[in-house]
Image (tube, rainbow, N blue to C red; front, side, top):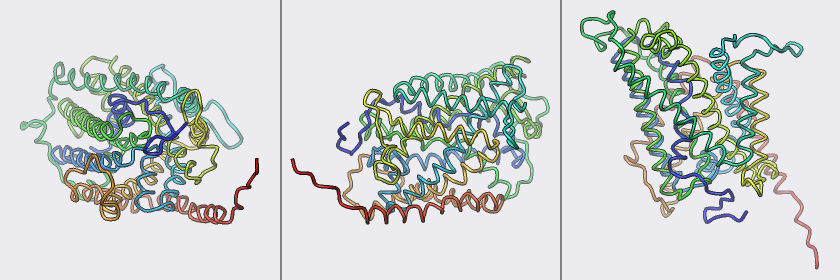
Length: 464
């Protein structure tokens, strides 16, 4: 296909609301249904608990405001890859691709796929951890096998075009937003404030909270908010991108923030925070209080559908990173193949489907989720820092949208990223070192690729 004026070969099929669905659908997974319990275990003071979620909201809004400028200036497939390449050059951009290939994306597919399959099996009355197959020392649980099947399913749907993936994404996003909104509204309308709350109500629940505990809780909160940046990966397939991308980034992020804050308020309204810290699936406890035992099944089904939609969103967005890198000759050019009928980067989709299925079968949820966070946040920060670089080095760059609150808004995000990564370094030093080490192995690979390109023989000249 011929490239458009931004150099993009993929067809621009996503409108504003499909773009919003990509962002919202990629963000709302299992996090808001499960994460509040782990946050409450570290922050059992209600005003500080809510403050932590507000701080997380401010961080992601700062990220979305900054990314809006970058996405409008570079409406190309690849998102973070393109932003880092334009700001800092090909080596850091290649390291992002390398991290996505070996650390970030397979980890995300695995963690999301396991969650979707586990709640599907629970809804149907089966044990997700039951061993269903063994290959030598490798024991495969039911949740891993079904999760691999889910990855194959969303890969197949997206193989036949992003418009088909968008239909699935729109439907799942409508369902998950509706389910979460219904939980909030029904909880306040039909639920009764917990009798175990102190005389002052929800906000009278106080406790001593250390700064370290607060920062560790922020890790879980930012995991729940993660997905706000995924829309930029499909920037090359968004119609009227310089107008649509900033609007979709802001509408989608604000939607997620409102739903998350509303959900936490209804949780606290019905369950004291001391009980919440022991409620692994707090949303199910709330639903049970409001509609009875069936609430657990309803919430489990909602989480299954919600995380399946997140998995589909990840399959819509991630292959575009490898497609963009292959177009730059940083990966085999075959990965840049665009199907002439479906207008999809089919080779990149197959690559991600296979990698996701392999990782979900050999690793468990916690390792997969941690490896995702450690891998992605350094590059989120690098892309945001690129706004400062580009303002200085390319002052005449076409910027249909300029970051509101610049230069302070990007700085807020960068400080949050520093705290997040610093806490991971202290808490999970071994895992942090291993994943960063894997990313840095991309340096010799890049140098070899650059040497090979420099010493490649010139193309043969044929006379006709």
